[in-house]
Length: 504
Image 1 (cartoon, helix red, strand yellow):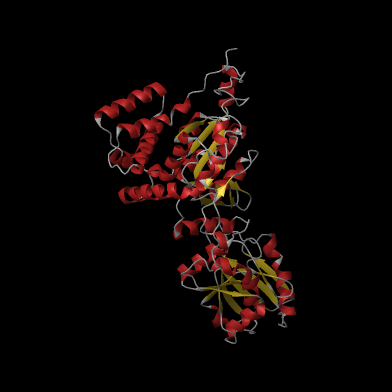
Image 2 (cartoon, one colour):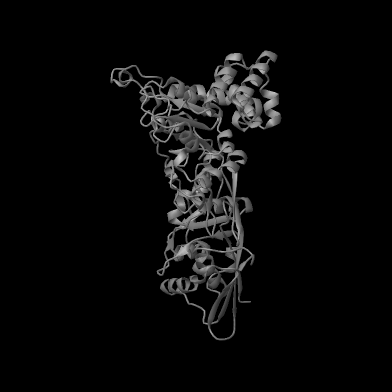
């Protein structure tokens, strides 16, 4: 029977659904047909495969060739099916044993000389093959990425001939080898002079996973502060790092296997579109919110962003996922990131500054701040004014604050308390967990209600304020939330009111 079956993997979001590559040889005029919803790059594989087989001194069957990529309703893209199609042709024509293919899966693009070229999306394919109980052969260029799955059984090959030698038993499979993780220096919090209130907010945000907004005049250190947040976060767990690495693998932008344990820090330009933030394309790829999964997304010049782009953040800020729907397909990407944003207080940037140089009217400031919707601001837990420092605080001999290592130790201890208590960080507590773990004394409950009325905060903002207070208590090593913890949490919500404008 001139029929062969080869197992492979497609790419759909962060998943790698199985694809059965069926190759059938029949009588008739020599021709090659690829069916099963292939895209252009897959249809073009017939020419690459033919050239690769001939260059490797194999015989290309002079028969009517039908290649079926099943399931037929799953779109297939890229050159990842070149290798399984070539092996299917060899097995169907009797040039290799078709039984040798049963326990293996194959992905890889073929060059015209038979060399295997790297593809994207290898990491989810390794995970899926492991779950299916089969070994996976990938191009040698993807070996370090495939080796990130410690429990996977990925092997590498450089050419089509090497793969065939493995299947014949003439060559031992070459296991994928991981590259050593390279330590990457992080900006140190000690470089930030003064700004005690903003530094404290940064520590609270790191400890509880809370979203943070810095508001201040130009050059006061907002971007400097935001860049220090990754250095305060504990190292990602293996599961967290693997989730982030899978997203980078399918993004088409490449994955650095030497830095896969580092939490991502994404800082897109303010001209980025909504599609750039959440992802998109005919073949859905992850956007910035997903590339920042388990890391930090920093949006500088928040008021300069297109409002439609900012509004797409509302869903992932709440759910931690984003769904990209297109006519042909849809994909869901994880997006559990920590948002840090920075903005000026007014169009000229100097509202509230001690110099008194701001000439903006109340109406101009209202229009300026109106570029950011209330529902989006409502989802930002800590909103902090960053004041301009006096020249004396910037002297080389001025006293420096704590370094990142010291603060990170407190952050790690506070996070450990949260995980023991509820299994999640305080920022991710649901309503029932918030009621259970963020209880206040009657006097403090009255204080909270009066503050909510005075600041005109929503029910969502009240819940988020309670979670921030819970984090502050955890940093202090206190199980009950004290009055001082609550008042500090409320102080981070007072930025909701605009600074006093210049009298026109």
